[in-house]
Every structure is written in structure tokens, then in C-alpha cells.
Image (tube, rainbow over all chains, first blue to last red; front, side, top):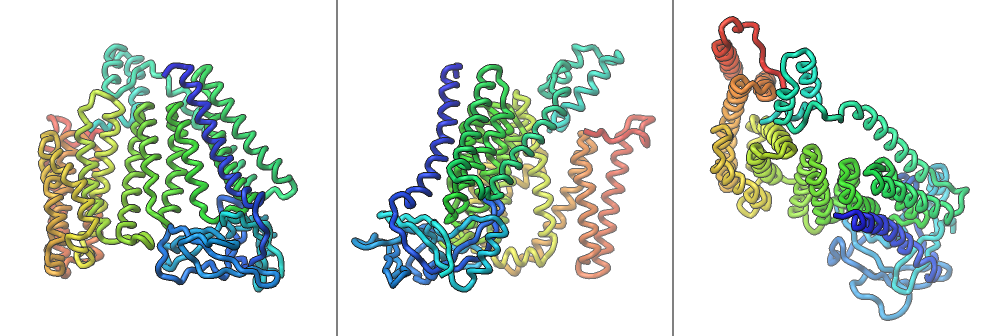
Amino acid sequence: MNKRTLKLALIAALGLQLVIMAGVFINGFYPLWVGEEIRLKTQPVDPRDLFRGNYARLNYPFSNLEAPDFLPGDVIYLPLTREGNLWTAGEPDHHKPEQGLFLRGRVSSSPWWGGSRLTFGIEALFAPKEKALALERQLREEAVAVVRVAPNGRAALVSVNSE
Amino acid sequence: MQLLGLLRRELRSECRQWVEEGDISAEQGNRILARYGTSLDDGCDGSLAYKVLVGIALLFVGMALLLLVSANWEDIPRAVRMLGLIGTTLALNGMGIYQYLKREAGLGWLFVGSISYGASIMLIAQIYHLGEHYPDGLFYWALGIAPMALLVRSRVLALLMLAVALLWLLNEGKFSPPWEMVLFIAAALGVARQARSAGLNVVTVAVTVGWLNILLAWFYGYPWRPDFDTGHFTMNMGLLALVFMVGHRLAPSASAPMRRTATLLSLWSLRGYLILLIPFTFSSACSAYMKDLQGFSDPGLWLGLMAAIPAALLALRDGGAHPLARGLVMGVPLLLVLFHGMDREAVAVPMAVMVNLLALVSAIVLIQQGLEKGFSQYFYSGVGLLLVLAMIRYVDLVGDYVGGAVMFLIAAAILYAAARYWRDRQPPGQGTQGGQRHE
């Protein structure tokens, strides 16, 4: 490889890193930018992660999957219905709802203890250790997640408050 | 086996001393060292300490970056945090690229830049609360390092990529079959080839074996979760045979790094074989293994055969390997089929007896080969295996006390015969003073 080609290839490799970082950013930011704000009942659990700092893991009433006809890795759609201030989820489906607001997620297996979970990208709230632990204590019983949902069902977490 | 090739630095140092003291000429010294892919003028020694210390310092800088990210800098606005780290990543890698193009240096900058790149991905995930599938972050991290490692042919970057990819493998492997690992394995092999690195070759082979084990676990548990089963033993027996024979096949290569790779592969597959033998010296382990096998439909059997059959063909054509090793490798496919097709319970005790005998014979051959060829690694492996077997049998007596006593007498007889054999082979006057050659 001559020096000019090597130079271009190295710049392209650096460009790839930039594209990946931009992709991760857009993926996270897109629903915040175009999405509609909704409020979902949630419960913070398990506030620790070695790689990304401290966080509270959020569990939703629709996080655990009981329907047996979904396999890990399947894309699922969850229709949302407004009930007062809060939104609730309907039954998961393989097909995108034709109308109304919905969440797009994936089925993931719980590897070592069996069962399946649904994940939508709104399951982690990062915060300093003390804040994460305090959140877990304060919001153990009742908490509300403020989420923005894009028209294609992708969601992003905005904040977690007491009800 | 070119075990001395693994100690090139020490060999170089010894050779320089011999030349200085007039025992050999510089030309002879260079001819000796050329056999191991080095020379008297090889200047790696002086800079090693510097490289190691700088490498560790850079690793600490990278870890500090990761910790800063993990600290959740709430006081700094989101955009500043994100642009700051992305800017740092670009600056570090940009400096590394500039230095590399200018004078083939700057790998330290690229190393810290690669850690900063991983930290940036995590920071973005942290700012926007992306946590639905955390292994993705590790995947993107390793993916971003791979082209850089290949282009600058850096072993350190390749090892960082493999380490991150391994973390991804262990995490993603819990959720789905990690097929994409093949990308990182290919990239690491590419760097190892370009950088002529035996160590990276062997680490990549080890990671590949781990990857195949996780894929097999998914064969068993698909689509729900990875399940580890007794068929894993079967597959690993086949893989060990293949790695051993590939090592033997590469041994006569003209390339010194390839010969070092061959030595390391043979040595580690031999150690793997000895470790694998030990649990099967217990009849209860044989019984559990045979009981849980899934017959001919077991994917572990088929993957094991996919490795064992090429290994057997290599053994058939390779006259250089010891007859016992060749016989064992050629017999592996048949053994695997027999294990999976037999009446399970009935063969557990005969199997344990056979494995015990095989372990004894292996120990004898290793001791004999170690003495005959002067390979201390073989000699001590054989002695170590005998001692481990004796200890196991002391704790877990074969049948009864008499059985245990017989086993100890056999082991004692082997050791005594080996000692006599060694003494008889020494030239006159060295019978009790000459030593095992240490490599």
C-alpha cells in the first residue's frame, strides 16, 4: 500500500469511528427530537453498571413477556393507549399498528434464568451513584417515566419522576 | 518443537556474552540466532522496558478516561461533554495517524485514542440513557478499532480490539449467537500475519475456541439461551487434536514467527490434552459424560468430527509427530463416534481404566521424549502428570486400598525406569551430574 492510499485508508478508518459515534448519537437523540411525550408507570431496580457509570434499571409493567409465540431477537410492536395522565400498553404484536402511538422493541431472552423480556431503549436511567440509589429508594413503589416516542415507535427516556 | 524460539531475548543475551568472551565468533552467533528469527544486532532489548512502562502508563490514561465518563459529570452540559470526548478522540487518533505517516510511530496516541473512542460511545449512551442492549456498545467499540489495527499493523491495538470483542462475546453470547465475532477473529489474524506475531496468533486461536464453544451452546439452547452440555467435551477433543496437528504441520515452516506459533500451539494443545484427561480418570466423570451425551444427533459430535477428521488426515501424512500422538489423533474421530454410539452406562468403568492407562503411557512418553530430545517442558509435564495422577488416586482410591497401592507401585516403577534410562544415556562422567537441558 503506497503512502497516499494508506493516508486515505487511515482517514477513512477515523471517519468510520466518527460515523459510529454519530450513529449512536442519532439513534439516541432522534426520538427526543421528533417524538411525542408520554408518561409510563415504571419501577427502578438494579442501579449499577461497570462500564457506563451508575444507573437505575427501569422495569415497566409490559417488560416481562408471557406470550410463548415470540422468539428472542423478534421485533415487536406494543400499541399505547392513554388513560388519564398515564399511558398503558396493549398486547405485543409482530405487525406495526396501522394507527395510534406504539412502541417498537425487541424480545430478549433472560439467559440464565429463563423467560423473555421486552426492551425498548428506555430501560436505563444514568445518574451518579448516590442519585441512582436515592432514586431507587424514593421511587421504589411508584414512579413515572417521561418518554418521547417517535412516529416509527422508537423511544427515548427523558426523566423519571414520582407520580 | 522450537521451545528456545520462545526465549529469544534470553538467547540473544547469552549469545552476546559468548561472543564477548570469545567462545564463538559473531558470525556463528548470528547463525545460531537466525534459526530463531533474531540476530545479535536486534535492538528490541533496550527499548522493551520503555515500551512496557509507556504501554502501562497509556493504559492507565485510558482507564482514567473511562472512570471520568463513569463519574456522570452532571455539572457539565450534555453537548459540551459529548463534543469534548468526541473531539478528544479525533485529536488523539489524528495525532497518531500524523505520527504514523511521518515516521511510523504514534501507536501510543492511537491506543489511547481507541480507548477514548470507546469512552465516547459509552458517554453518548449515558447522556441519552441508551441501555436496552448494552453489548452493542462493546461491539461498536471493537468494530471501530479493527480497521485502524489492520492499517497500522499494531499488535497492541489488535489485542485491545480482541479484549473488547471478547467482552462483547461474553455479553452478547447470553442473548443471541455471536456470529459477528468472525470479523474480529479475521482482523486479529490479519494483524498477526502482517506484524509476524506468534503471540497474537495463539491468543486469536484461544479466542476462536471460546467463540466456537459459545456457538455450540447456542446450538443446544436455540432460540432461548446458550446451554452448556457434555457435547462440549466432544467438540473440544476434536479441536485439541486439530490445533495440535496444525502446530506440527507449521513446525518446519521457513518463517520464524510461524515456527513460534507452531511451538506455542503444540505446547498449549498438549497442556489442554493433559488437563482434559484428568477428570476422565474418575469413573463417575466418565459415567456422567456418557449418560448425558445425545447420541449421533449431538451437534457437539458433528462439530468435533469436523475438527477431528482433518486432524486425523494431517496425522496420517505427518511422520514427524510421535507415534503415540499420531495414533491418538488418528483415533479421535473413531473414539468420538464410539462414545456417542455406545451403551452409555456399561462402558464408563472400562473407559476410566483406559483413560488412567492412557494418562500413564502419556506421562511415560513425555518423560522419555523430554530426556531424549532435551525438552524440559515435556519432561516436567510428564513428571507433573504422574504426580497429579498419584495424588488423585491417593484421595480417590481405585477400588480399594490395594488398588491404590498397586497404582503407586506402577508410578514408582515408571519413575525409577525413567531415572535409569536417563542415567544410562549420559556420556561417561556425567551420569549423575549432567542436567536436563532447560529451555
